[in-house]
Image 1 (cartoon, one colour):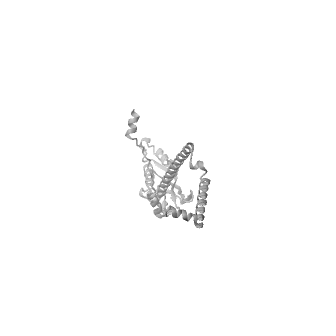
Image 2 (tube, rainbow, N blue to C red):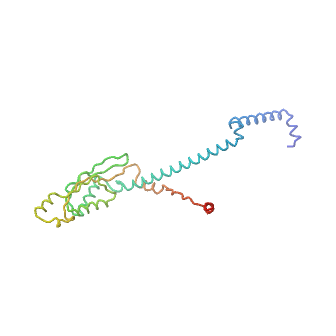
Image 3 (cartoon, one colour):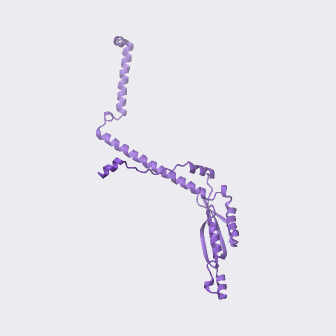
Length: 243
């Protein structure tokens, strides 16, 4: 549209109406811009305000970095916890703890031809909503020292790992009295032949939470562990330090 046609159009009633509406609209937009932006000072900030805003940005960036590190640390703790859960007794993989735990102890004793004088039942004690202790509270036997040590080592090899909550190991008084009555020298009593009596309680930690064994293994594999970033020093910085 040429300038002459525009001028002639503005002189018409329709043109005047459109011009007035456009002017009012521009004024409204300008007023709203100034009103919601915080005034003219926000549109044209001072040096001090720009400096303060930069400080706020640096603080926010530092906070974001701190939150990122906390999140990474939390993810690492979750990964380590799930890795530990996999090593605990899981009936999905290890069977019923009430029977298998006693069988494990009995088989270890049978392999070493050790006769157990007592083997109590398995008692379950809750730790929290997903962990528990399975414990054989009454376990005892009398045998040569070396046989008992081999028995303890055999239980140590069991997986999931067994732990001694209590272990009392002392010489068999009846055996020592027989030795003394036979008037045998103490040099003939070797540590391996001394009969010992032990009494203890063995336990295993179990997991029966919501996550299945496959889900935990999958979660451990999927959880990324970020390594700490090593700071590198540029050659220019090194040269500047030497100067």
